Length: 191
Image 1: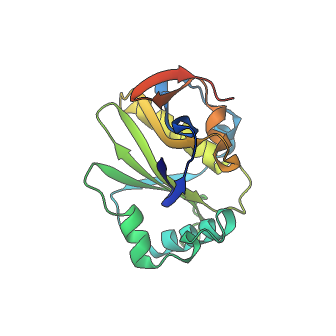
Image 2: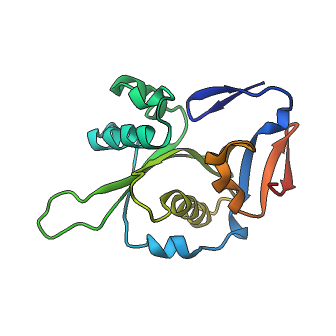
């Protein structure tokens, strides 16, 4: 079985259940401390558009979190093809430190690409400053859940989860959740 995961193809050998889609019912998750720690961030939602500091942050994230995986050398064209082209209702969300009084742009900390579906939000890809140690990834998921609630949508689709991948452990902290197994969403716990 092949699993498309963050732009890389990982071959999964023995069990189809090693790479499964995950979702969260938006009404069953409450905000956590990480959400409060990052509530000061300025958030801007826009359509998919190329912004140079987004691309620079993407490369910094790839080098810091996935060094040597190939995506840490992506060209502007590869980045654009991967994240900024969509045939559905997609949004780009940027998270920045608060603006200062000088009028200069504030520091970009995170960018998230989301698809807005009929029943939920699909978290396509999120990248952030790996040197910022305030739980940005968790904060982003909590923010996405809140957006789903505000839009009256039932689900946040978190994408693939691979049990053996330590980089995907964060998905196991959101409970209850569902796993897509044999084409059916099933309540499950990560173990």
